[in-house]
Length: 327
Ligand code: UDP
Ligand code: MG
Image 1 (cartoon, protein in one colour):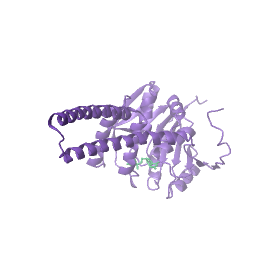
Image 2 (cartoon, helix red, strand yellow):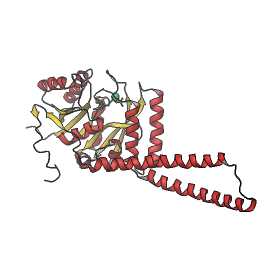
Image 3 (cartoon, helix red, strand yellow):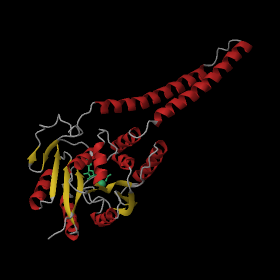
Image 4 (cartoon, helix red, strand yellow):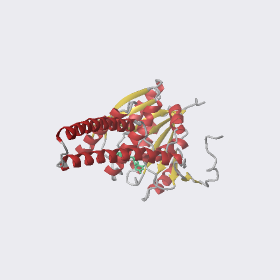
């Protein structure tokens, strides 16, 4: 009789990945066949692709019932595709991996080994980043610095979403229903026993990256605003400082006027003060607006995503008004 094997879910968010899915499946198949100690489920999440991604997923499932797929109703972005996958995964552990094979599936046995040793969150840290431009590496490094300076929680450097999560981490992540998700920060925020594994990040196997600087900047702002309100403190602090300097300057002007009479020229200094203060005010209005926008978006309590179908089963939305968490 076969003993009870643990189930491991491999979660793959995919957006327009028709060129790599077959390759990905081959690598995963080898991995699953070589690791008979576990049962595997591959959960492919189609994030509203415009190419044949969904069709390929369906073909793969027909061939191999270890594969499940989730079709979102449109493109929601990787962060949302991941939470959708976490909601639908069945494993005792979940491994999140990119579809483009930048995260080598061959590292999975090592992740599993540490999981067996009792770690809850085994994350893969990049030793090298091949096929990424200098500018991308540089900006990512600077961003980590800024983020770290603003937030109190420790964000792991050079670490993506490639990691193994124990079921209790998955449940913790599922409990956090914020709509502007910064998953990388959430991984740190939930805590639990973390273990780092080093790997070489490969270049994309085929297809094009879905990231552009616009998305990256948005994600970076989400990263800061979803974990800390310290920019608001900074705003207040700088406001106090500037008012203090302005107050001193005011006294200087008053005294000067009393002592040596009205001094009409002063256009340059007046302009400088007006422009400087105006600039500072606009910047901090922007910062406040950013937080207000977040509160607005979260306050709507919309579902994070809609499912078109899970495997062959069409989603009817009949249970939508009932929150999963009300019970
Ligand atoms: N992805 C997604 N939804 C999106 C954009 C990307 O599910 O809107 C997936 C994509 O298919 C891939 C992973 O997220 O599996 C990482 O994307 P990509 O390789 O384009 O990013 P990069 O590795 O260049 O940071
Ligand atoms: Mg990639």
